[in-house]
Image (cartoon, rainbow, N blue to C red; front, side, top):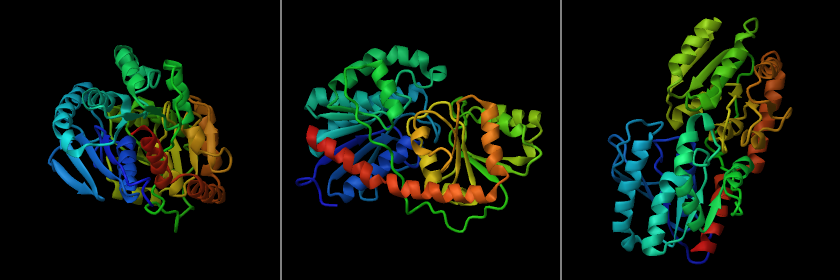
Length: 382
């Protein structure tokens, strides 16, 4: 790609960045890499974890990790988020005069947006906030209601001072506008690395279900387990890749339902392991209760998997109902069971929908397109 004008100097802030974190971390890494390929200079500030180096190059992107007390690879708690805000603020305020970015791209209004807001206050650096889900009031109220109530005044300040606020799905934009209607919020969807995920040489004969993501209430795995508990007469197995606080509950539920021998908890997997896990599956099961724009779903359709998912924001934009899979009402176990049954008994239908999924991914989603849209916005606000 040719750079816009002479190329920008862009600071990306995100408390999670591969190999830590989930979808937002992966998204920021892909966007950073594509911006570098376009001729821009990118510096990423993220959280330190374990023995990861304090500074390194990833795909020509300069990555700096600041102390943040992070203890888990897959998630962080409020104290760790506050630690990142403090540490990243001091680090960037000290280092920014040397880097002199034209603009900042902050993933999540909190914590990264707080740092971006401070940089604007001290150095007049404009910033864009990329909303990811958990940072939007109304998202996952069963988890975040109190947090959002406390953070709402600060979020309004961060959004007001941002050059632009961006959502990654139409559903998330609607949720954001319900919280604060003062802003026009464009949608820039996530992309997918179409070269890394492949749909070739898949065995469609035996139903092998896969779910990927944090094992938390949000992901609705309990709903899928109860749905599959009513399909014991059919042949199938289900692999769950991820880790989280609901692991013990789900293992107990599987025993209660008498399906524990068919369910395999794979734990946290690296990107390379996940790519192989997608190859071994032939149905993707995603009964989530709330999403922004789920990267796991993008990976699944790029891998050529038919999808059974709840009809929620993000998912309803990625699944073409009855073409690439089935969308069912959220929390509706009977509808979920009926959709699963259609695919479990029909290898040819699984293959047909899987091929359609891959074609849909190729036609619609790429990280190159996502990064170019962000670059155009950054060019306008710098």
